[in-house]
Length: 126
Image (cartoon, rainbow, N blue to C red):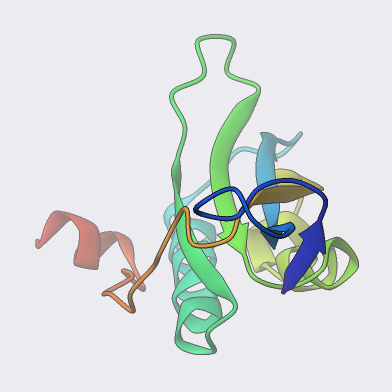
């Protein structure tokens, strides 16, 4: 989604345009993760990417251990929350989800379809 706000366009003319994305943070939940739930989590992310709503996702290295992952989605926050809460690992309590809108100058980022692993085996190659 792109929005126009007062500011600058290249050359200093016209309003600045913004792209609106949603940042989703995975937070450590009360239940330990296991291989089955991790595979389900990865498959869910891959499906969202294939649908075109998940632009990027990956684990975070949070020294406090609270934040586990970050995703960027090109849907409004309420839709992103609904999609992320459909993740089996979230439903099982391994993770909880926080979402927030993020506005950046239009064209500042671009994304291409890529391979998102559907399992731990896809990640490790074993």
